[in-house]
Image (cartoon, rainbow, N blue to C red; front, side, top):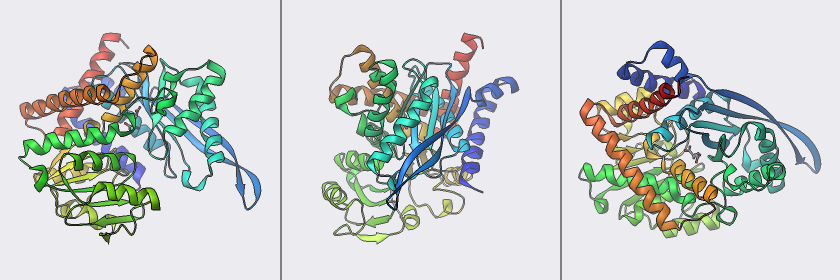
Length: 416
Ligand code: GLU
């Protein structure tokens, strides 16, 4: 089965389980599953190829899932595998995330099927601006606020802000995850990883894991994976294996994250990291460890490797890294999972703080952003954990139940 089907099937499974528990009627379920609007966007860009200019047409998408609790909110992904099915599932997930952490947003997601590493800076700027120009009629400061996701970054957001501002005036709140110089929030860049580490630490403490004796494996060393590694290392955890798209590295004694970052800055990746041995991405997932953090793409833990996973705690930094069938097997084996909609919610939470600062034209300092972030994440974690205990279910089931219940209540109160 391809990835897009796995994502949709996984999402559908978790939702149906929550719908049953919440005793929702067929009509309520249908509304919660339906996107408000699904837009397909053609993005033509002039590419330089073998010394010649050639027009290339990329396929873009923006799915606005639900806005019962506030404006649509969610990232934009630049990745070759982007397709409508995947974006639809991820847009739904954003609705549950914003509800779970109780911020006044709905859920959306977008992206372009492109490998950004194949484009030069000028081409990437043209792609970002053209995509934003074509999305402009459906986004807005109080309507839909995009943000970065896989393959996009603060620079892409800066280009989009520029494009949108040409026709709407300077509107910093139109996108979040911007560079700090253009209204971005202090702490936004590291917020997702910081939140993953904060929640990993909370869950680990409840399992009586001691940081200095806990072995951590992180799959994916992009923005989220690297900041998770930094924050966990700062708390004293032993990071024994890391990976990026080109493969992994292992050091049983634990990495010095400063050395890893210096190597990555100089060489563009983890390959040939001094003092480490190479390991494949597949083998890395199966290493015996206390905490496993999948921080790459969807569906990395499936039925094919679920039985081989030897972690005690899995913290889902990526969106949908564990399929529902794998989830059932891991739960049976007593492996604790902090689910994506809770584990990586720090990103959109910091986006909310950025949006608030932009609307008020009043920047906060990093300490304030991160302390508010931690407080709210702890609150969400405790609410999910308490519901899980009360219902005798796992954290994922409790998180979905809590989030969907809030969205359903907003729909009921608004009367549509
Ligand atoms: N792309 C991030 C996510 O999946 C952040 C979205 C946002 O900040 O709006 O949660």
